[in-house]
Figure: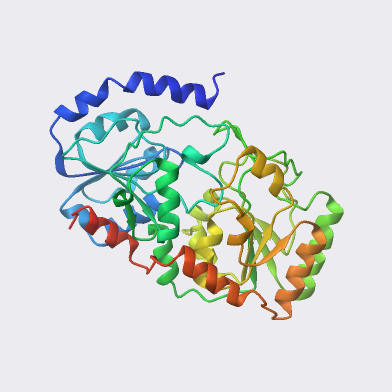
Length: 380
């Protein structure tokens, strides 16, 4: 079976002749394409929800291309259609606007077409041109991308080889919910580890190979100790692995430790931003979600037991990744249990540090990213 990088190279060769075709074909300025080839979620889903909630679909024809199209089209709103990946190119060639978070078409946008790369989080781990071991052709296949601050604006320029005026300082659509959510805070600790190995992406970011798909916890005894501590303090730990992480051994059924996936949340009508709003603290590592969580101003712990290996294999977008970690940095199970104990005791010694990092990385996020992006694209 061919690896993903090989398939991507073949795809680029097959699509290359479509550049002149895209320039010639007329565009429908009332047609919006939303493309997400790794699941209908994240910034594309948030932008779509905004469009439909404000009835933009009465003025624009909205096409969503995603793997879940067959299920979603059954209840599609008026003037909205869901299509599979096979129809994506045809839709793109006629669309006046295109928004994507995952995947892209290596076709340059036409003059009368607006293509926006919404991406999926501000990068602590390296992406695009900066990512080690990945080929990048140095070409920019969008008109605009987005950032949450001037600090990340410069990083996005370097990652995608684009100009400064192509980076919109709007914030991220997925974070709007964190400003407009009245969910009550509960004694829930979230654990969002990023992926280490992903067959879907043809990517290995570190040599980590834990039994449960999470750092630090290796044995049933480790798990039992964690369960006992959570029970003692009345906390529940909700662990959600990265959607691209290879499937590892599932966690056994426990009272104070729960395992969640995007599909499980979707069945309950939730997404990770709903449960973030309800939580008391976050455990993560090199995930972009740590920057989003700063908007809630709640304690964060960072597992960094494989930081050096991750840096060697994938790399980071900044020289010192720890400089953007606004919380306890833990490298073993004792550090994890200490974080939970401090949380239960109401101690929060990183409150000022969170404010400082938040001011650096989120200065352009104000809870209206969706509308700001649409205005920048002249969609009204």
